Length: 459
Image 1 (cartoon, rainbow, N blue to C red):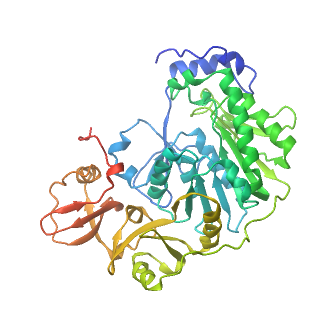
Image 2: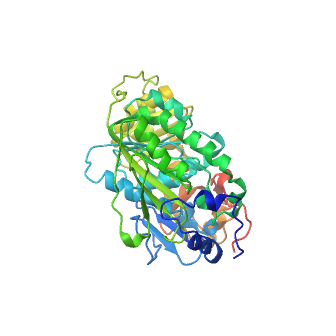
Image 3: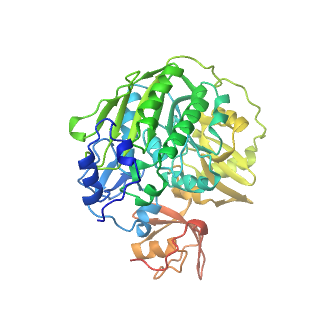
């Protein structure tokens, strides 16, 4: 590896950060590469194997080498997510603070794209829990939708709103994750180009933005709810100093998260309030730079959860009876239309959806099933990847790896002979990739053009 050229003043700026060792830090950037890690989808069990677990994440694993994920059909089926190992620490925090909670909870991932932490959160939730994944930058919403659709669950709503909009949703969420925009120094080894963006001025600007975002979203957290704050920055201004500001300005109490000594995580405390934080350095953990902390709210901002809302959609029971057979356990879901598409979401979340529809731009709700054509459903891609699809209602075609890649490229599928006719789930190792329409003389490939594999050849 080439010797890193750190930005001017960077090393001196973080020299006083808790647990920082300049010599070892520099060596880690000179001599070691960023490890490759994935997080398995617990709802889509597959044959993926690794004997090298990420110690702070139940489903996280390191890989010995970095494969071509683009040409792995199991990636496209949503069997795993490629995620940096340090950021999986959020899994450990969530499982600790929610370990004794048997009631249903609502969780907000405020800065959600591309979806790594959203799918991580979702893996810790029950069907009766609700995840709201928000992304303010509209151009990043499609990739968030795609990644959550691959994960397959029906208890997720995607919104695209400014953090200040959530201030109207008083006391709605039990847990809020703010993985805040930051100066990005924790990604220098993985993405050396990030060094070009770093400056002391940018650190100060990020600190101000972080304070504003946290103040905007604070009213939406319920009393005794948890705020999880994280950055990929080493700067104390964006980390421990933010905790002091939060504890000074709001009724928040720091939560100490138990960690194992051999994990290599640096436990820190803020200067004024001794609030607990957790630092990841690439010379001390097998991962990149991260800061994370958890605080609990000790006051009420109100409660919007019992707000009445007007259901503008009159139930069309005739059409609902036509779409329900395409869903497993169909009576467990609430069905509604967006334009001509039918969607399904866990019945428990109908009221929450109604409230959210009053305040937010909703980009995805539960699972998009498809459109009715007469008495038949033209199925949507989301339904194919979902956990709620009634597979017994459709044909299923098992593909080998070569055929699966051809399908994902929307190319002609070689050596696929079938006498079946109709809509078929195209599967690889039992996991659905999408739809095709089987016809007597050809196969119509309905894999979405916008997410197809663009490269013409596999490696």
